[in-house]
Length: 414
Image (cartoon, rainbow, N blue to C red; front, side, top):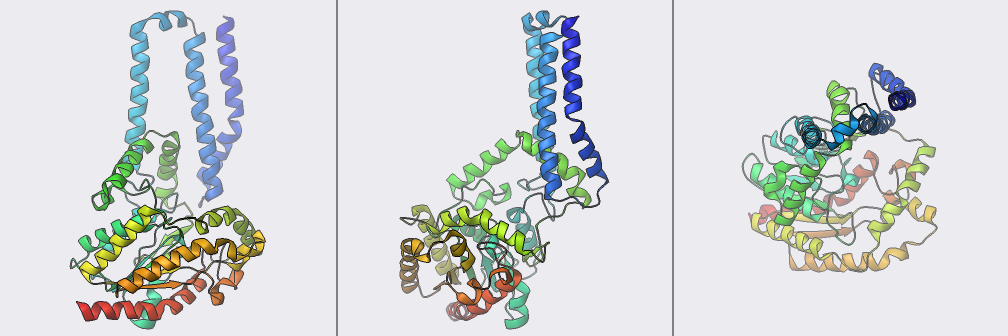
């Protein structure tokens, strides 16, 4: 009897501890728009509730009458194992069907909980009726480069294929995909490639949707497949699936970036306060420090860059590599001089300049200290290196001559 009372006391206490979370969830259901703060609360409460349910089941096994018989009965143990496997199966079905990260080729969305450019932009590209003259590759730094600006100002039909965390391996596989799926199976006249990591470091491939696996190198494809399998049994993805079904699918989720049909990213927060700007600067200092520092260039990254250049020779398109301007406030905040990163910058520049000298279709610009952008602070940046739309337009104007040269080379050699 005491065990039964103890069991129900624990359950009651656990329920009371979850009461605030339950109230938060009920309040969230009534909101017209939910934000990142709501998502974090939902994820935390979901995890806590999951652990509470698991503890309740454990206590159920240990303290209810007949528990000793259950524990000693092999057939009952098999039943518990079967129940566990059924729960794992339900988790896999829920996550793969809901597709909260866009990994699978079904239940695609215009927006996801995270900024999933890799999941959204291939579909946008497939919807085009003609092959663009220019493709913009890069990281989230290049999200806000407005493709329409190139069309309106210089009559260059453009698609923005910048990817969150984009690296050389991402650009190669995505370019193969774009050539294969373009309306007339042609390559663009030119591509721009923003180099975020000065050591040319690559991504693991774990964020790549399965539909792009055929265009990946074997080692990257294996990582992408196993990452999809691993995510299907994570509690966090189960939570994301419920959040997606409740809020994202009902257009109540305020995403940080949405994408136009031409791939250009539009930040939902059009302005940022000076206080939030300073917080964003401080938050990204460590990240940028790592991106700008290196002792050697990454061999895999170099290999992917050279494969990209080889693809350019094969399909006769020009390539404009560039490093984007770094916010001067980053150096002020860290109280360091740019010379700290000079060895890595020199390594990259020497490699890129040699690459350009050997390949007439390759161009390179080091804009990391381009003052018309880098010294403007809040006018051109939201943090240490991510540009506002105004900063992106200034970047385009500076790159325009190189883009025209790359396109002219392609036109003359096709």
